[in-house]
Image (tube, rainbow, N blue to C red):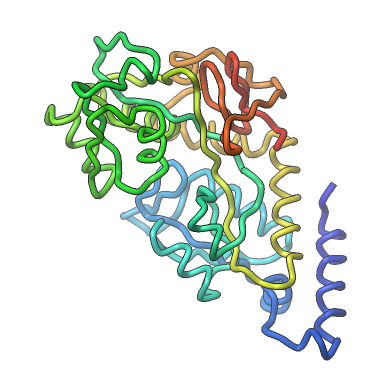
Length: 311
């Protein structure tokens, strides 16, 4: 089990390495956190349910805020939150403005410039469609008559390109633009990961419903780090995440923050049946999670796909 004692051991090793002439280099993230007593994270103001900043008082909430508060608490350091955007987070990690940023999908392009932890959770690709929509498989949507809106260049874009190459893929600047396209009747569906799809439908009751097309396909949400020679900080956080998944803390943080946005466990059950206490895994092509019906994350299990505590 990772404890403050093991963190201290990590620090002692880093300090010893820094004393060697061959290791005379820029201060590592782990050393900086020790000497400053501060953990620097980035957060996205309008990134609910991952992150959300109050317009009224500037306070933060979101399941990654809860997770980062616990990480800082377990380390015995203060938490410093810097407002950023999804697009700028990688640049700020590279510039050593952040020690870690939670919520990044490890795409091949990102993996060229920063390092990643193991998955915090896995999240199914889903479609927001009209209430009367009866189609249930990706192949049913894969035709020239179907218009599927996505935010260009995103994991949603990649998923639709994989599964529905013959559909009209409506690539727009942002998720909000894709949603507006569906609302205006310019698209028949919007692809989003399940957590975002359920949040969208909760806020816009008239937009339709959520379906998880079969075969299921999922992405991961990970922590990103500045690339550095000493992997101690990345290794520590990766082990810490796994401990929090095993203990159920990640699951609770997600469920609690989804509830604040009006999404309940019953809403997950409406799109797939899952056992929150199950511990199984499945893997799809190219390392993606794949399943027959549902999402794969760290807080439960769907029929044929898993919300598991295992990596």
